[in-house]
Length: 223
Image 1 (tube, rainbow, N blue to C red):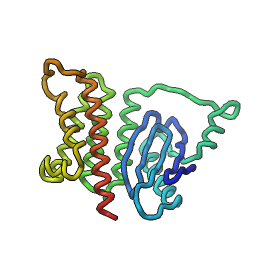
Image 2: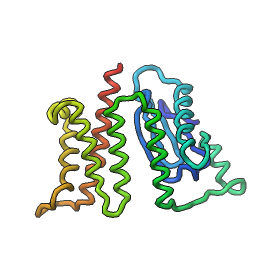
Image 3: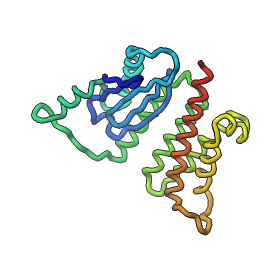
Image 4: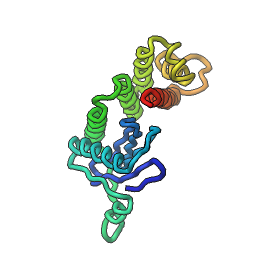
């Protein structure tokens, strides 16, 4: 493990087990980011943060994820990873994921996240679900990521009772995200400055920002 300030980083081994994996969520005031075989935890709470707490959470997560992929996973340092993958002691391998492989890893990521968030805020869990669906739609031919992104916004609007209340709590990013996610759901308008594809990608990024605003709202409530 390496740490920078309140961020703790590991590599996952074997790397083939999580090829193409991606996720991001908040649990126990830690932001968990999975990027392929790289894992980092950033503490976003205000109370003191220990490396032991970060390591325990990382182990819990990687154990949950490992149960759902090809083989158990282990946390190693970046230095250990380089030793294992740099010739002559090791070698980097490249592979392209099959559709079945991508679906299996996406399912494993979803299930591991839900296990860690079993006692977390229901609205947040549902937002993560729809946001993952939206990101997966980006990689599908003729996918409709904006449709799934919009569902996350509907969940948030229901949580606060109205669009006005959601904007009051989450800021104007909620309104921007809702407009961007709604645009690709309708027939194109004349003079639309951007393609429907770029509009869909923009909507996904704005929904990411909106979910982060909700995460901050929840973190402030537990202080």
